[in-house]
Image (cartoon, rainbow, N blue to C red; front, side, top):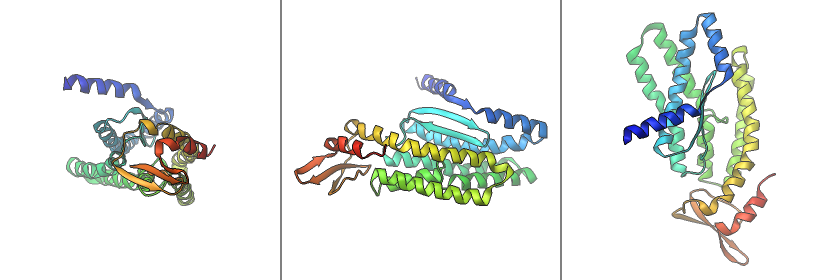
Length: 256
């Protein structure tokens, strides 16, 4: 039974696996330029990083939307991310950075000389790059999730957006090079995607409040604020209202 389930997961993953056209182009350039080994080695480190995200997502039964192989790495998209518990989502995010300890050990055991030095450098660079507070990096997601546990859901997203754009601008100024144009271009587009995603997500989340698993912790608010991880109640003029009774007001408050 377990074997059949694993095979089914692999089939589902294969159908959700996408290869970006630029990845094929980069592969061709690396082959012609004679540095295919180095390119594939760096790409493998990023893919192992993403694989750890994927395994943790499978463990917590997230719905896998797609896994896209980009020219400079891979991107895991989860359909129900931000709809599980905060702790599960934090575990999925942290699985990527933690994977670099395993990758480091593998490099030290299985390689040597200049090639090992190159792999160790790439491993360190991928680790550091993913901790940047820029969407869709792990650093951004971790900060966003931590903020969601401390402040209003909507405020957490828009503060994270401002931090992401500010960090991107700094990164752009200091790392604009010929060989970083594709990465910077990708990150630039992602900031606009995040701006569009936030109101869409908030509408979807608020609409599904009634169907979400009830939280054990309770939070009483004196103003319009929603905290994830809590069952929210609101002290208004007409008495105390449950979060399910506030859905229409939340939806009206979403930026259009």
